[in-house]
Length: 245
Length: 274
Image (cartoon, rainbow over all chains, first blue to last red; front, side):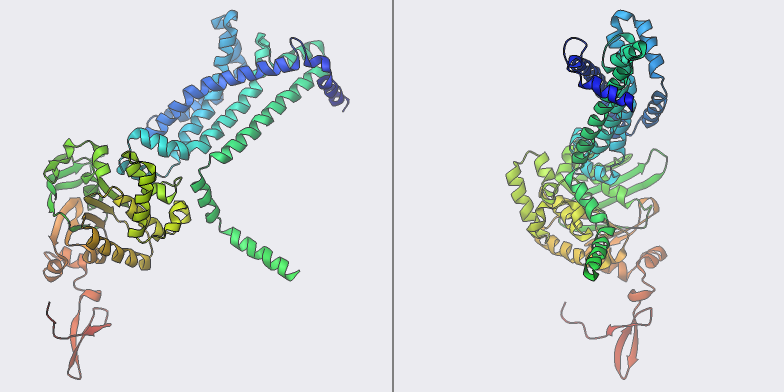
């Protein structure tokens, strides 16, 4: 437990919260790379996922990409790209590798969100005279949003955790404190930074959980409520219980 | 008037769904296409709004070849009611009904007013306007579907087994409602079903289809019942059995009618002035 107390003291030390290389700066760097990688990945994966989901073509491709890319060794890839592209461009290469990590879950979320929609709903939209764009924006995107946000959620978690590796190519972030902590054997710093990474991840997870909930269209949520047939019996059971007591 | 001229449809997988089909569907009448699955009836219906394009032949609406009309524009002019209503689950009833007018650029307020009127027309309580489709019963959803089909006041209303998924009592109710609507609105209705009773009830012209969209017989329900053109038709309409095969029995000098199952169907009386 001593280690956790030390880590807490490190985190609480006001000196660690100011100046260059302080905790806020590291968090800022961490969020910067996370945001950049997520933005890049979303710009690639969402349109591609929607295209696949809307047309139904290239589904195997999406599954293949998602599966294969999940197995990529991020750490190795990071060094490979920094070596290949050159140390001066290590920022872009890091972001690129993080994007590769984030694309599969977003792609899967985007196309799966469209794929689970009842074909009859889309057929009806088309037979009413919606153009393909209108079908996409007015029907498929709203109905597919919860799954897309689910994809963004898992991508963000992976990226937030993996940005830690950026410190190995000297880009800062909270990984810097971890790497430095290992080298200096200052475990309070290492653990303190690790806790911050965990907190960031939990924060994003909570944020996306809320978003995901609100992304479910009201009509769909309303339907779910009435579909749950155990609810009335449950209530009745409770009522009976309270009646007898 | 909708006219099919030598229409054929071969799907990509090679199945010939419709083979050389020709038919005239008169304006302001209900034409019912009836047949079992695989008879191509839905395919024929969907050719009218170009959800399916014919492989060969010509289809004209009021003399205008549909292949020259842009599909999206064509579909917005034609009402379409499908089985399971096909309502958009994330939109309220009123927005579902107003969908096509809104696509056509009708202002929201006006489209909503019209939607409320249509709810009256199809016998839906206006209180339901704010609900979502999932909060309605199957019968109510179908009514919303019909209201949506009527939203742009189309000349043509296509109905693809619209009452196939509701229970028999609600179905009977909706059928009567459609007859009433048709008397009031005078649309050209094309109705697809596999239920011959429904076809006889609703159709001015009934077209019985065999596999591949071959017309086994077409005519008014009375014509078909009086003279089934083939054994297939006779068996399809059940002319030789059940409640359509009535026989006369004399009991104490009065003539009663007994159906094919041996149940009393009624009494034979002199026909009144037609």
